[in-house]
Length: 247
Image 1 (spheres, rainbow, N blue to C red):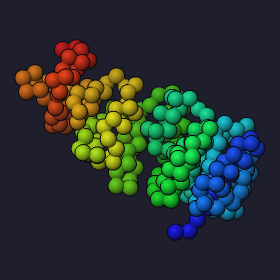
Image 2: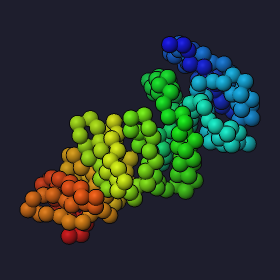
Image 3: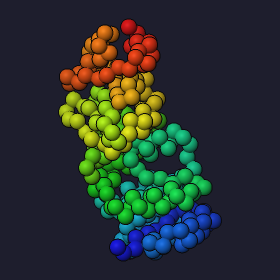
Image 4: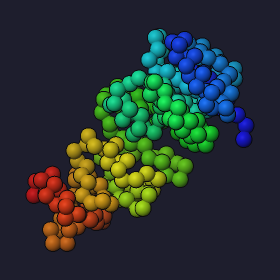
């Protein structure tokens, strides 16, 4: 396969030089076409070179990295944000499925971002994911989550998640409209939704939304949820579950 054409954007010269050095030393499949210090300059270079990938710093004067979407009617290149943001912001990146690198940049994480870019997945829905990310960061509230299923990206309102069911290395996300298969384990979703008190881990295979709870059988250790979904309850989770639902 050919090289990945890339541009990097950062207002700090030292940061540009560090990332360039890492790319040259550890990422031989990257062809760095330009280094830019602000968004207007980056827009010009992107239109000129048509890169596959843009490494984009977020915290810049005049325009932040997020505002690059204002300059294009269609985002047809991969974006990897480079940031020193706090943990809340990192959670926002995770739930919106937007790729990021934390400063100082970890080489293994950099290589992973490049591998994802090579797969060229989900470019068409990138603008939607960027909008969701921006909303979360502005409002500091997570209302939706992006779930990948067979190359498609689904933006799901958290209120509509009835339960997450583990099945080997996959998970089924149950919603009123459909069941979505995600190639993530249950711990991934438990971590993403850990600040949402309505979600309770009730079994090694089940994470449920108590707002969709209909009934609970103490004798059979089963939980009936909306959508005719029956979740299992572990005997080790029984007390925690009953406390959470105030039975």
